Length: 383
Image (cartoon, rainbow, N blue to C red; front, top):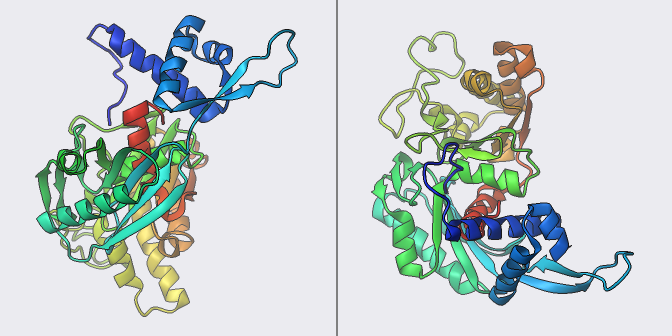
């Protein structure tokens, strides 16, 4: 994934302009529904000649279809409506965030899951985890009933623009060319991004999020965050933006006053990271055997710690919406409520008072939907 360059230094070449114009047309059809050639020209600001040329290519590729005359009341021959053929191609998406299972699916271009697959991921690290990912991806490519536009992978860890996993401590991956290896084995385009970044794209494209100021916190085997500002995904100078899971949330000073207890070692080699208390394995261990009241109190304690970590981030960026993505039985309710209260206690009213903190609207398919958006964006320029 790449983001828009605020100060471009290179000349826009004709081939680049054509790709951008193609993306504008597809984006309008994806989000706005059927439109005529004249509608597309007005919506994109492109000339009718340019739009007609692009539409001709898209018809040949099978991405767009003519749907028949419009029902408008204008005098003369009615315009022909065009629509995106969302069912004509499929996307294979993989979600690697869970501690126990690798999830995958075959989706159409509208984000509907038409087939699913999974692999046991317990204790899988290093090359064994890579082999499981490849096996699942190959299985799903074979299961597709339409041409596969590409494969999208939402992976834990720090991932660069080439789809190389620079570091994923929980999977034991360091400098793994995941996109390149999968593409060589599968023979289709592969796009890999950090799972939280993918989840943010999923919320933006399919989940109804505004994208003006959005933070998506993913909770699985680890903890990450994806940030969208002004419609642009923030990745950071070293592709590590959003690594909230490895912010120190507990140290020896907290032991006496916090109900969470003493700081614990993290997979990254440090101690007291947020994911040592907020990850799914840590949360499940914390509430095991507890009754309703004790369980709620334990989850609320973790929620307060999450709020403490989020407060300076939200104050620095002035975000309006935070989405939690992970098991609702752990995150919704006491944990979410306590996190919001802690943020509001630690920020100015203008920031905390208007903050919307909610669970994902995409359920367990948030990262899967985001992985599909990686392909939509990478292959069609649509998000």
